[in-house]
Image (cartoon, rainbow, N blue to C red; front, side, top):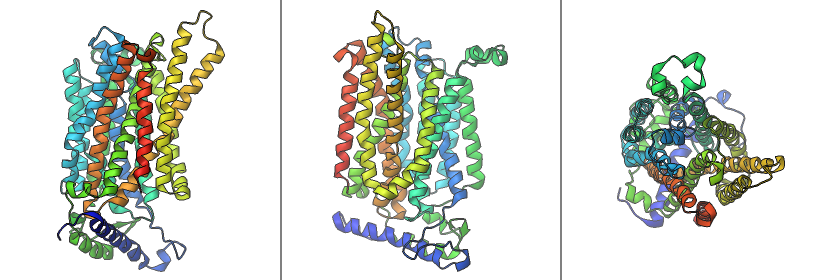
Length: 499
């Protein structure tokens, strides 16, 4: 079928998508009435495919653990590699390492998303993350650190594919419950990753009774957290190999069945796969010609940029010495901060988001989440100012001042976690805007490329800006927070273009 641009293309896209999804609802209604839940006549909610969603979540868990487990110790690692003698410049190098994973992922994301078959891509991505993480722990110089961090990113295209799978095994009646699970899994990884990295780095010094005599761990103090991360990824890979089902429409049509809830229904396949084969496959240029998708990609970039910048700069801010405006915390303490609020992020995605989305709808909730980012960076500025002021205080730091600092730190972390509910809203809007089911993987691939570019740019940008602001005392070290506040305002304003 010839592609037409503009509103005609968008209208066809919506019709094609709604047609395949409505088939799912009508098919499930043809089942034996005794097997159907008691639902209102106006709204029939399709049961969630719980087994496959559990496997998807386990596969998704590997990436955030591998990505975040280096956060508590990366600044200490850079310092021990003796790349710079100036503590203010540590941020330049840690930002480079933090962002390289996402930059490498960006280079291959659309390629992985466009391949024929979901399952092979998931498995290959898990293998790459597994090997890359283990080798990262063996690194003894900057080039090894960069090489293995990049390798893990190049071979990991799982995020876009897993989002596509969720879209293919759900419909509009249950997606508001299914997509937040992806965010919950990411939040879970953001809890486990820092705990692993912060508590298992330098094990020979931290746990001398267990590892004090292990020379290997003395020479490779960061191998143990990387090995634990790789082991989790390896387990995820085994589960995916044996239990994950293929969901790509062109592949499923040869399998005779389709997952709907916990049931296997042959009638659904016969109907929807015929429709799916007839749907056109949109190119990246054609997908981006849809105005709503272009607007969503822009907001997705800003959301990912603000989130990863918040994550990276908080770690650097917490590690930086107090005279420079930081909190001067240890890797273990930083891990505790990140993991504690990560639990809050999980609860928000599981409990709060579905209720808020049903009450206020997706787009208003998305805007509210984006509006929190400017507030977060104002709080960074206030905390930094007070921390620096207390160092020069001749009377010492009172209990009340320290209480104010920790209240501000708590607000930074809590509001940041609330703002991350925007990712679930973002996925719902992208899924809705996709031209059709056959182009769902490519659409999420473009969205993930956008996010990967933001995650590659964010850490290097914000950490370098943090170091530059402190080193040159621009606005007394506050320049970084002014810039990030401005970007946060821009992110909120960009949501006004969405419809």
